[in-house]
Image 1: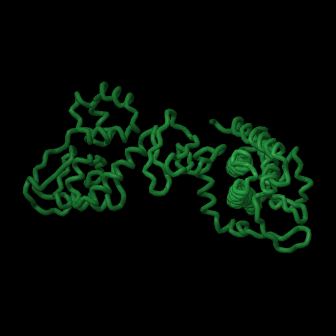
Image 2 (image 1 turned 60 degrees about the vertical axis):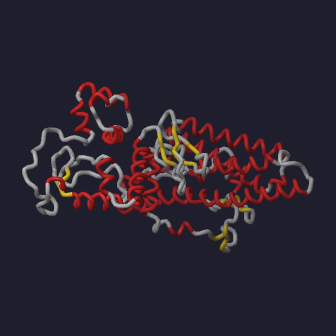
Image 3 (image 1 turned 90 degrees about the vertical axis):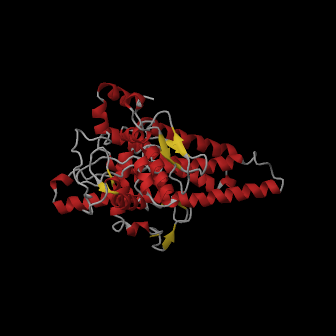
Length: 408
């Protein structure tokens, strides 16, 4: 409605909305004060009047053609229909929607959809273009996101656009609204992007710690972790640091904290490089380990589901009676998922009192998650009240950490 008085076509209005991220009130204010500047800033109109066409020669193929075979945007750069068709076809096949612009060198003017569509041959190509336009319209809107699930057409709308956990109602995909990555609290979007890029770049360096096997510190036999819990029963040691499990008390879970070398700034560049790699591998190994634990505990969850089904079929209670086992496994996955994403957060965190507090809460959460994992994997050995109490403790640790270190 705001563009009606300025005689702006709907296709051009869409380009303006996309350019200004659908901030309608801001667009209307600018339209009232200086509509020409608004149009040029949105790349739908040149900043000043352009030359009138004096030639019947196409600016790309240099062929002389009839006047009605020459087309132009408001920039007055004239090209023949065949060149425009080829230009648009190539870009649409490459996945471009809103971003198709004038063919003239250094001319950024965008092509509205009613200019592009008649140039595309065949309904299949036109449908592709419409899908790319729809994608660009959604992705530019500050309150909308396309679900990143495979072939999922659902659009998620929120009242307040920020980094938050959203779940698709159609395919169940869980992701961060702001960056469309897997949800990553307490780590912010920029940090998780840096972390994932670093992990991809350094994947070969970290390959050796991605193996499923380690040597037992008691007998040196090669062992494999087959459950989510890091407490290795044979030998009673920790899978992560290979230390005695008895040292992993509830007061401070030592193997989750990286011990910085305070004198490293005074050492050689080679020593500093080795220390940087050592620090990265410390955090990467724990990040990767919790990811694998999540996969192994998903198998435990399916076993619990089968066990509940078997008991119900044998009249050993109802689904409601055994629901606490289902809830415990689901909560374990939620807590461990949060714990996994505390490691990129800690890796990029500056040393100081705040980091010490974070590492303390991280250690407390890790200890309670390992207790919960142990009890979920051995649920038949524990009373319902004991398991539910452990669930409550672990969830409280998780909530406390997110409350103190994540802007929810």
